[in-house]
Picture 1 (spheres, rainbow, N blue to C red):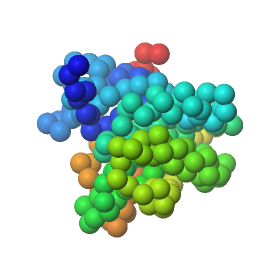
Picture 2: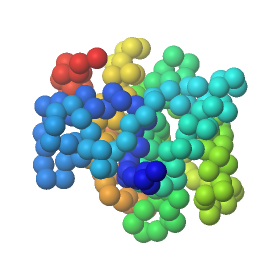
Picture 3: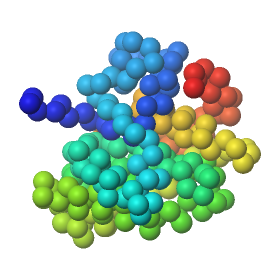
Length: 215
């Protein structure tokens, strides 16, 4: 059997394929030349409910077996939608399996459009999720468990939803923008990736994006 090709970014969902529709492209665009598809040389999509199913004791073991096949610690970025307490947020695992340097920082970024709900309350579950992934891959990884448990969880200030129903729309747009603009490397010594700010996008940008989606 031929060796499986490694992608730089693992997108844990298939909704991202639609996110490229009619978006502006440049020579660094991460979307393929075919509309509504991701560049499979850089991206790989898989089932979106990893975290949700992991939180269920009855399916946790199966989820970890699925995840082990994806070699999380070999990817630059892993983009994971989270739905918990009927609210969607987006977890991005950055530079796992790499040593901290001036150019890159292993970290977890949690993008949440409802900061008033205290996104950090997910931290214990996220950390257990990451440590369990590490243990599932442990035979193939040189990192120590204690080092994995020290990876910081960062919650940048990003645009916030205007009602109690838009969290899913925000996760779609966060994913689209990150996939298109993710830097090759970044270090938290210089702050978050330049685009993760409160003025990252305008409400009308989100509305226009969602108006183009074909769900």
